[in-house]
Each structure stands twice: as C-alpha cells, then as structure tokens.
Image 1: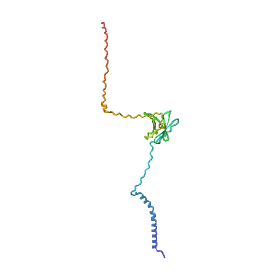
Image 2 (image 1 turned 30 degrees about the vertical axis):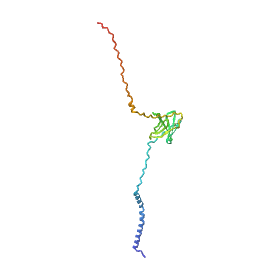
Image 3 (image 1 turned 90 degrees about the horizontal axis):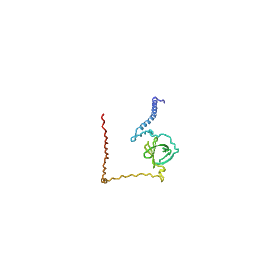
Image 4 (image 1 turned 120 degrees about the vertical axis):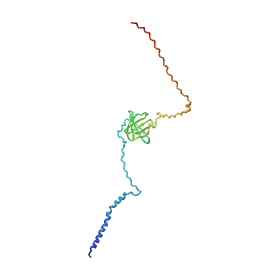
Length: 220
C-alpha cells in the first residue's frame, strides 16, 4: 500500500522531536559543576568561613654572633666549673698572661680580656660575643651583656666545693644592730660647756732707742 505524504511528514516530526529530547540532557550536563561551585561559595548558616593563615616572614637575627677564631690552649691550665641547672664552664689560664683567659661555653672556646674592678673580683669580658665572667673566691658567674641575662650561676670548681682543711675561711662580718637612744638619759646628761677662747697675749713693743746727740755745725 503506498505511503501518503501526511504520514511521512508526521514520521519526520516524531524523529526530530525524539532526537531533540535525547540531546537536551547532554547539553545541560556541563552546567552542574558551575551550580555546585556557586553553592560552595555561599556560607552555610551557623558555620564561619575558615580564615586564611598568613605565613610569617623569617625575622633577621639582630644579635647574630660574629665569627672569630678560637684561642690556642697550649700551655694553659684548665679549671672546670659545675653550675646550676647542669651547666658546665671551663676556664683556661696561663701564669705568663694575667690579662686574658680562655673560656669554654656550649662547645666553643672564647678569649676574654681582664677588666679592672674596685671590689677585688676577677672580671673578664668578650665584647664581640657579649660574654662576661666574674669570679670570686667562693664561686663564679657567666653573663650575656647583649641579652642582659645570666647564662650560668653558682659555678664552683672542685677546689671551691671541697676546700682543704688549712684553707683560710671566708669570714663575713656580722651586721651591727643600732643601739636605741633613751631620751631620758639624753636629757639627764650634763650639758657640754665649751671652754672660753682667750686671745693670745700680744708682746709689748720695745721702746725706741735714744739717738746720740750730734754736735752743732760749725759756722763758716
């Protein structure tokens, strides 16, 4: 039976409509990630957005220690000190050089110069590293003048911890308590009368000597 034109046209319209319906989901699929991204940008109620943490820039070391060669320890005598908090200090001195010592602190040896003091304490300094060593007969102390702090305190050698029996003891003078003053005793005390001041006697001047009489001048 021959196919009529209207039936052929209807079949073409149905084919085009079915192809359009199949292509519509494929074209709408790429829009889904954009919608999700837009929803992700919106903050949910009750939840704050995480703040961005800025990375800190490295702070330059304003107190950088200089580099200097370590001193020669040949011919020196070492003295080890045990300090508080388990710290260790070793000093090296030579009888031929009284103006300097070497000091080991934290696996490094420094050269320190003697500084005169009015108290009798031994003071040595290294201005480059800011180290100050103060030694007294009973202990020693290591300071950092750049950071204004103590590095090691209550440092004692073996000889200071266990002095020999014949060593002279360090005697500390006891404090003298003030004597109370009784106002009644002060009132009853006799008044101090100053002695009168007398002027020294002035010696009398000697009488002038009489001059011998001179003869009258002879007339011309």
